[in-house]
Image (cartoon, rainbow, N blue to C red; front, side, top):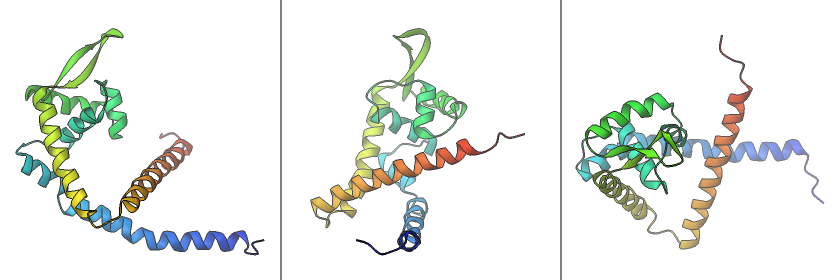
Length: 171
């Protein structure tokens, strides 16, 4: 039987998290400071802003055309933000609005062939850099990392959303 008190267990978790926090901060900073997205877009040869590329990638990773609200939800932004970006993507023939077959009044957003090609080149670039960074890792380590990172991101997202739900409405 384990004689440790619950408080001891909590302190153990806190200590582990305290060693993890600087690494999470380091990762956030290296992704931001390295200009990862900008570098990849430059390599791809497309002059587009970060939110526009995020929409292209969101659509490319989807198995179907999406409504503006679905794109916004996946990107964790508000719908009008996506609508503004969508106007530019449409103007550049990277994405287009199509009729929703389930509701003729609604519109879905889909990539054009050029938009899909841009998103594919961008993703190949980013994934290539990540693959290179993980090259010395064992297949088991890569699999564990992917599983645990996904679990952490999902759990933290859900926890923070629950905290937001507990906030009193703004005056």
